Length: 76
Image (cartoon, rainbow, N blue to C red; front, side, top):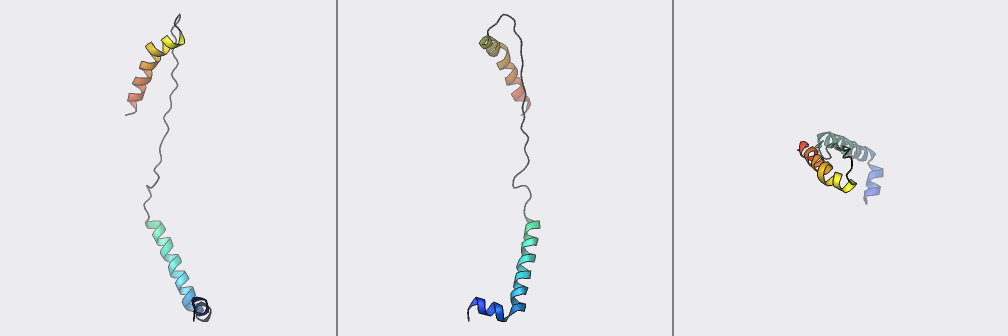
C-alpha cells in the first residue's frame, strides 16, 4: 500500500495531518522574528553654495566639500 492509497482509504487521518501541519505553520509564522528586514531611512540633502567670481571647481573645493563633510558627520 502506497501513500496515495492510504490517504484515500483513511481520509480522517489525512485531514488530521493536514490540519496539524496548517496549525503548526500558522503558529511558527507568528513566532518568527520580526526584525529580519528592519526599516531604514535614506538620508538625503542638497547643498547649494554661492561664491561670486569663482569657478564651479573652486566653489566645490573651498566651500561645498567642507559643508558636505560637516553634514555627513551629523548623521553619525
